Length: 263
Ligand SMILES: Nc1ncnc2c1ncn2[C@@H]1O[C@H](COP(=O)(O)OP(=O)(O)OP(=O)(O)O)[C@@H](O)[C@H]1O
Image (tube, rainbow, N blue to C red; front, top):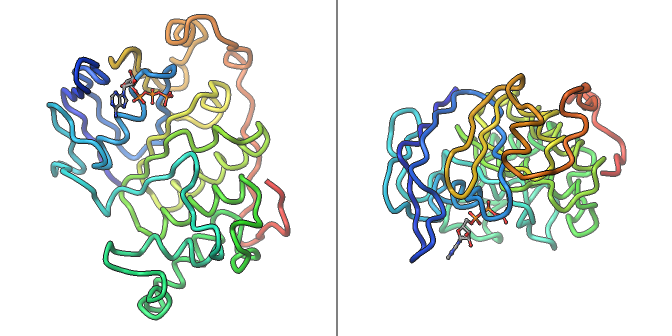
């Protein structure tokens, strides 16, 4: 269980203030980051994972300042950043790579337990049967699930995901979000996930942080995410379904891997 603390975080790009005095703490939760385009979501995630240096403020994981890139922080990208010519299994294994490793040396280098971790991570995302398939032959949803498996192999304390389902159709997006939430629960990692789709956010989020113009607009739990609050964040958007939440789609259990599930 991990605690992420953001304290008075500000990021300026020249004249543009992308984040302004943002503070919050999350603790063993599945937290969704909401905000319209340009609100500062990516900048916040990039500051946390060390890809961007904050102008001021502090970021701590379990009380220790995070400075620069951290192996304890797993990242899932919108475009999943997989190596297309390699299998799902080898892509998952790359989660354990250190910066000096090469793909050629990857299979020789990894010990049995890391290889087992990669297979278990693929099982968690329902892709054990597809472990040896090239990711180039997989659907977008399956590729994103390999991206989740790769982050799990890193054995992070915190998982960040930047618009992980933005390029997927609604059904695949729900399936991938279901696996992401299941993976975070099984591995007991804190997760911070930015999303555009409010209804998907409402299905899966346990807590919601809203950014507007780089500032924290709200930090609420499921009951607090009202259509009025979402309207305040986005102006007028489609908020149908927020008031009447339905159960998220069922995700197959790990001991019953999906056979050729197409997502
Ligand atoms: N490298 C950069 N240089 C200059 N300005 C930047 C840079 N990155 C982001 N910005 C600016 O910072 C602000 C916040 O951008 P950011 O990408 O964090 O928003 P976002 O909420 O993730 O948006 P989106 O959903 O479109 O990705 C915007 O005004 C953006 O133009």
